Image 1 (cartoon, rainbow, N blue to C red):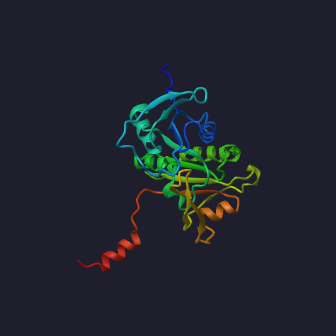
Image 2: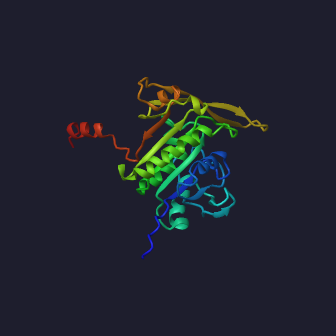
Image 3: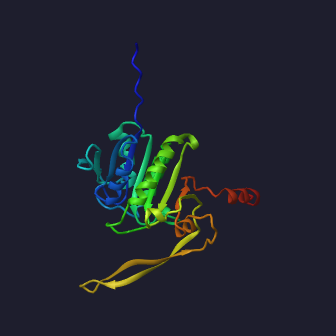
Length: 262
């Protein structure tokens, strides 16, 4: 009798922007243990706010490091996007079944998605038609409690692995409120809130009397609707926003086509 062919485990690529040794990436790896073959490729140092930056003027280094027992882990000298590119080409030699990024220390809802290295890594995977998810916890502390985030991260990854064909370039931005898991009301699929930072640069002087500047600012939400990620998080829901890399403003495109006569 012929042997039944064993089903291959899905390959799960994990990265982040807080660095390979950050507690958040350890929490995310623990959250998905048993769901597939896990490979971690992450920056060798924090890369928060790097957005979709790539390294083009310097060589990239890739080193195998100790991580969670049984999980192949690599440290990369580049950006989060570099990590995804190198992982696919030089580590996996194939596309993973899913790419997950995080768990970020701090919020990546609303306008934060534009600047986020966490979400840019996920979007890079999405560009290559790899289903992807970025996870963030609304707590910037390295001592943050990731218990609730781990619970919902596993749920989301299980869902995506079962529904990979929903969209060729599927990418989700998931944010988790920093509260006890028992207080979270569930998951809410949302849109990105219209918000921005009212920024200013705090001018200071170094010991030599030379000026330097420190970026500060206040988060301002101009979107009071109840279908946004900001609303969901403030009301103790995990927010899930489907995002895309196509930045075309389609409504404006239609107007321009009608009014712009060249």
